[in-house]
Length: 288
Ligand SMILES: NC(=O)c1ccc[n+]([C@@H]2O[C@H](COP(=O)([O-])OP(=O)(O)OC[C@H]3O[C@@H](n4cnc5c(N)ncnc54)[C@H](OP(=O)(O)O)[C@@H]3O)[C@@H](O)[C@H]2O)c1
Image 1 (cartoon, rainbow, N blue to C red):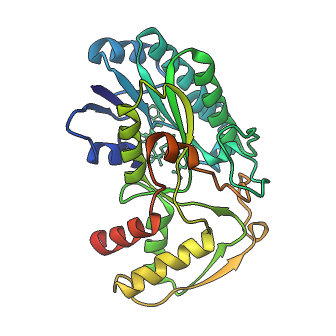
Image 2: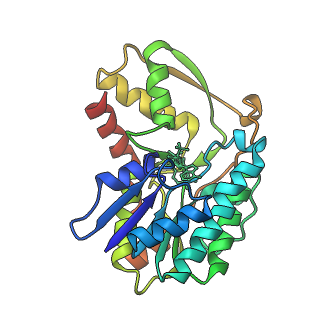
């Protein structure tokens, strides 16, 4: 099976390259080699590589910047995805696309299911939702995987930011009234490769896949600092004070509760939720 990975230098793109199973041939293309907004490039890449599958991890992911760069965010997260999906349909290629908890408004009291109505509250979420809709309407075979709070040993993420703060800070104020589930990019990579094995039976599906423990940003940070201190990776304990999102204004609004129900992927693909706490411990002990 020949698989093209877009956005290959991002954190999920890199993780996918680290987890390739033996029967998969990967062509990993960063934004410099494959700009997904370019019609010409899409045509050329499909013609040159003749893939069976495209895994689209490429995205405009700067959530706050998207509020002032709506056009660019839409170009990458929606318009390019529409073109990619059309090329997949025309070439009979299976499209695996990554989406986000930010397609929801965060007002639900129960974990979101795949069929729940979407209602994004920021530009990034809106453009990602438009990307999903474009795929669903395209006629291509697809699996859309919505995930949340992604971290890994690569790229930029909350874990790495906290570890940097831990070198110098002894107190931090962190938002404690937004609930979600951190997800390890290595686990998302494994899930994607499992789905590829089952594409004959699950060729038009949305799935939710996230970490197994719900937390707030403040409790997530506390877990990181406790683990890092006990592993002797930061010089002192860091005191985390929980604050409300109103006390930490950002350009983009974030959902209050972006917890997603992952039962469907568990039942259909026999996949457990991401054990994010073990992954955090492993990264801190082995990479710092
Ligand atoms: N990070 C999270 O917490 C999170 C949460 C939920 C869902 N997701 C979704 O998960 C996916 C992977 O996220 P990630 O954390 O791996 O993001 P990331 O580290 O920011 O990587 C995204 C990659 O996309 C590339 N890219 C941007 N514009 C492109 C274009 N026009 N053509 C080709 N490549 C382009 C970027 O390359 P350059 O840097 O060279 O521009 C970057 O390497 C995305 O779809 C994202 O929306 C992420």
